Structure formats: C-alpha cells, structure tokens
Length: 283
Image 1: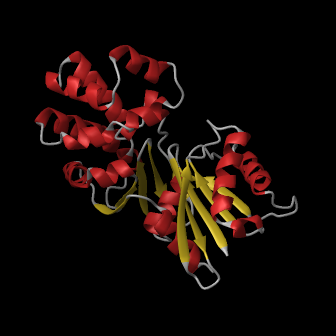
Image 2: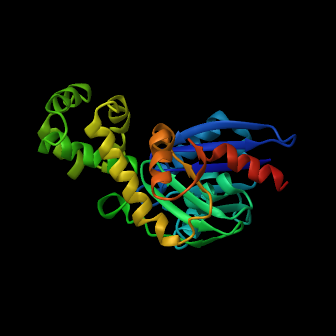
Image 3: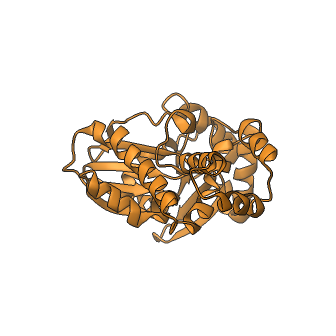
C-alpha cells in the first residue's frame, strides 16, 4: 500500500492506494511546516489514523505540501515519521513541494508549465521529471498574484475604498458577521490571514456578474501570467492549473490565458487524483 498526501495551508487531501490498486480518499486540515508546530501536525495524523487504523503499520508515504521547501523537507519527514510513530529505521517517507504535486498530477512525465491557484499561487517549468525553473511566488503580501488571498485582498480594498459597488460592503459584512474593526484585527493580528482572505472567494464568485468585480479578477489573473508565466519564455508549452480558484473561475482564466498568448490544457480542483494515478502507474 501507498499513502499520498497533498497539503495546502487550508486542507490536506489523502489517497490510500491498496494492494489491488484501489484508491480511497480522505481529508484533514492543512499541514504546513511553516505555520504548524509538531503537536499540531501530530493531531492531524492522529485524526487520520483514527479513520484508518492500517496507518499504524509502516507503509510508503509521499507527502507533497506547501512550505515543504528543500530545507524544510528533511524536518517535515522526521515530524511525519514521529507523528505516524513509524520505526526510526523506516526510510519510506518522501517529502516534496506542492508545486511538484501539481506538476506530476497535471503533466505526468511530459514537459509543460504547472501552476497553482488556490489560497496562494505558484508556477514552474517542468521537464517531465523535475522542476527546472520557478518564478518565486513571494507570498500573499509581496506576490501570490491570482490566488484566493490576492483576490480577497483586492476585494476588501475595493469595497472599503469605493471602487467596488457600495452595497457590496454591507452585504459582505453581514454575511461574514464581522465589523470593520474586527476585519482589521482578523487580517493584521490573528493567525492565518491568507486563509481568511481566501475564504472571501465564494462571495466574490457570487458577484461575478458585476463588471467591476469581473475586471478585478481579470487584472489579477493577467498579473499572474505577466509576472510569473512569461518569465519562462516558452509560450508554446501547454499550461495546467490546480486549485480551487482556478477551478472556480475556469472560463475567465482560460480567457485571460488566451489574451496573453498561452494555451491552458487541464484545470483540476485538486491534484490528489492525478497523484494517485501517477504513483499507481509506477507500481
């Protein structure tokens, strides 16, 4: 059996591949070593083991996650080993980035450009085996163009500075049951402001018929292509996307890609099924 995880800041998708190549899917909260302590990670693993007692027996684990950079991967592997309570000598825990998850899920062993548009955003040039170039995403404060956090940030700017319809501000505050001071507190002083900003995306999507909202999304997607994808200088390659934002706004995303001279091939809400297929084919 093989256990596969794709983890973002908000949630973790798990796939357990059985000996007969059957696949079962599960979810836990996000596991990001940049934000969570070992105790937080252990709690999520325990909740998964409660649903799947078989995970108390050592088995190969392929963990793809946000924040699992090259310098963090060994630490994350050790934390997972301890959280699963696998023997120290067990060496079958493999940790890689969420960007590699996107590349393998979208492209398999083919060349192309793989992108993430979820809570955050990212992209890479993939040669069929490894990532050969990556435009730094820089996070939701300095970058993350096109992401849920970026859209949420621009939306809040628009409703409070007046370039989005005035009635939307009251509708938003009522739906989220929040006041302006509470909003500032939530963004600047409480944990995970990126998750909060991304949580605004469903509200934004409900107002897509309003032109100023639509244009806001188009501008953010255009920035994503111009500031990230154009840096690879390979417009002939097909581009794939994973993530809730890409999936939610697929028609607009394809429209912007075409206007910027790119062709979008595949858009997936989550890479987990593609990862299960990738690893099953390698068995």
